[in-house]
Amino acid sequence: MEELAGLTQSLGELRETFKSGKTRGVEWRKAQLRAILKLVEENEDKIFDALQQDLGKHPVESYRDEVGIVKKSASNSLESVQKWMAPKKGHLPLLLFPATAEVLPEPLGLVLILSSWNFPISLSLDPVIGAISAGNTVVLKPSELAPACSSFLANTIPHYLDSQAIKVIEGGIDAAEQLLQQKWDKIFFTGSPQVGRVIMSAAAKHLTPVTLELGGKCPTILDSLPDSDLEVAIKRIAGGKWGPCSGQACIGIDYILVEQKFASILVELLKKCIKKFYGESMENLKNLCRIVNKHHFNRVCNLLEDPSVSASIVHGGSWDEENLMIEPTILLDPPLDADIMTEEIFGPLLPIITLNKIEESIEFINSRPKPLAIYAFTKNERFKQKLLSETSSGSITFNDAMIQFLCDVLPFGGVGRSGFGRYHGKYSFDTFSHEKAVLHRNFYFELEPRYPPWNNFKLDFIKLAYDFNYLGLLLLLSGLRRIFRSKRSN
Image 1: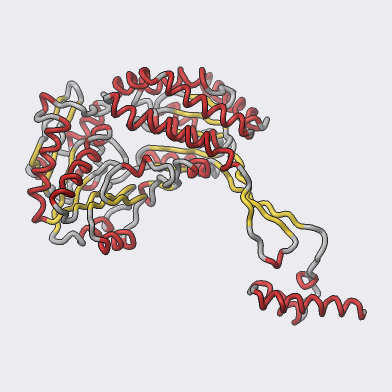
Image 2: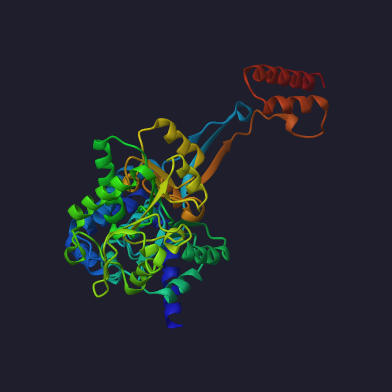
């Protein structure tokens, strides 16, 4: 009860701060964005250390996937927030003359951000940047599965950001449940579809809008390519599968679809990349994150326990339970009904599924839940158009993997089971804003046909008004003259 009372008090303070109007001003927003930049710049080594403790991330990977993303996002928002805040003029039909209209972005209020453990710094601070840019007060709950990063955020943020407007609350499932019982103006969640259902259920009680950044099985399609392009494609596939957090990424490559005749060369080229990037065997693995905890380690290892699945291993398959490390593993044509092909892998296992023709990949993808991302390596423009028009996914990237996450000019988000809502750049600002329609009218130039008593002339007049064009304008003016003449004669 004490914890709940403390939570209620904290949320009350945040609501009072929002009610005061403090967070609506552009200077407050810019000051907080500058503070986030200062936070990551002054604590870079501490961030690297926390990510090493939680996930075994190398500093290069930590900067690429965490620090760099936050700095880029905060800098972009700092440069653009004043423009984003400005009302946008709306174009009104001549029927409403004289009048003006605008769309005014306004903050939603008090928002809750529940972040994930696989990118515990960027997936915490990037949504916070959007919420601050939009002028909200914020509660951030980092994932308890990345305790060093959670502690870093909880202990560091109060020294940089406005503690009356932005608070960090740590804890596990109990803390999350208490938070979800509260009334929020927006909930932003990054995590699994299973937890996403819980979030939606809790939000529905208060009719709270939600953004769910979930996951799914993201396929990669490998079409026939010239040798030089194929080598580049394989490097990008290997980096997209094992590079970000050892495959523990919602937009990471989950499986590959390839024509059967190209499968053997694909496997050999992937083996070469693994050897070069990560080492030859379990004993000398390098540049690879560990699995986040024992539970997830066992879950990933269990995917290989089915004899029919283990029989499909063509590379790797070893693990180190003490250090929670799993070797990059390639499987060729595992059973399609096995867990490895029906559940999101979220680990360093890569199934390859062979097809007779690469066009069959469209039907294969469409027979499964909509993915967060599709990656297609092809130079066939016709095939690209078929993929765009005949598949549905949060995003589709041609001839690369993962890089769409870095693009602030593109919306990031899912569709169907992979989530809904979007963020990054201006889309983050929009996610945490309400676009209020504002219409200004004057007290003259009154159109009498909008009022009873009704007659056929008024019906014709209103029909013209809804089917407005230059000819309609002339007829409308003619109708107005008739009205004025009628009034004068009376």
